[in-house]
View 1 (cartoon, helix red, strand yellow):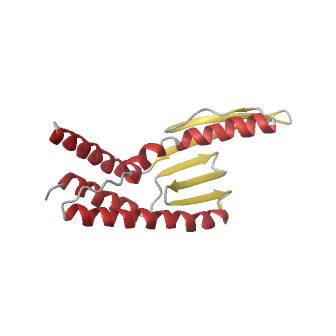
View 2: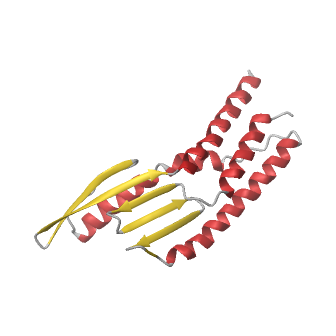
View 3: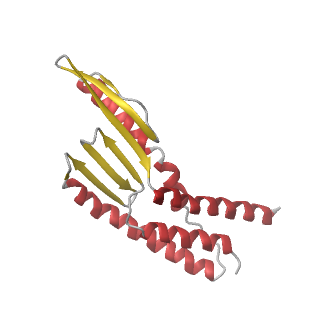
Amino acid sequence: MKYPVLLAYYITSLAIVLIPIPWWYYSVGGIFQIYDSPFQINLYFLGEKIIIAEILNILLNAVRIYVAVNLVYGIILSMKGKNYRYSTMFWLPIFYVIDPIIIYLVVDFLVSKALGVPLNYPLVIIGKENLTTKYQGATIIMLIKSYPTFVFWLSLIPVILYIAFLIVEKMKKT
C-alpha cells in the first residue's frame, strides 16, 4: 500500500460523514436551540422544531452525499496506489470553530446594532455565558450555551491524519 495514512484519512472521514449526529449544540436561554453539523441542522423554538430546518437538511444531505462520494472515490484511488487529495474533511472541523464567531457577529452586530436592541452578547465558543438586555425597563438575562458534541471531537481524527499524510509526503520529497 503506497498511501496508508491517506487511506486512513479517507476511511475515518467517510465514517464521520455517515454519522447522522450533530457536531455542535447552541442554546439561548433554552428558548432557541440549535443542533448542527455541516450535514444537518435541527432548530427548535420553545421546544418546537422549526420547519425551515427540514428544507435546509435536504440541501445539507446533498452535501453529505457529495462529500461521501468523493471520499469513496479517494478510498478507491488510494487502494490503487494513487495520490488523490480531497481535503474537505480536513477543513470542515477547522472552519466549524468559526461557527460560534459567526453567530456572535450576527447577534451582536445585526440584531444589536441594526435593530437598536441593546444586547450584551458575549463571545462563547465553548462554554456558558449570560446574554443580557433591557426591554421596557426590565433586565432580561439568558444563558448562552455552546458545546461541541463527541462527533465533533471525532471529526478531528481525519484532520490529524491529513496533517500526518502531508508531513509524510513532504519527508518523501526531501
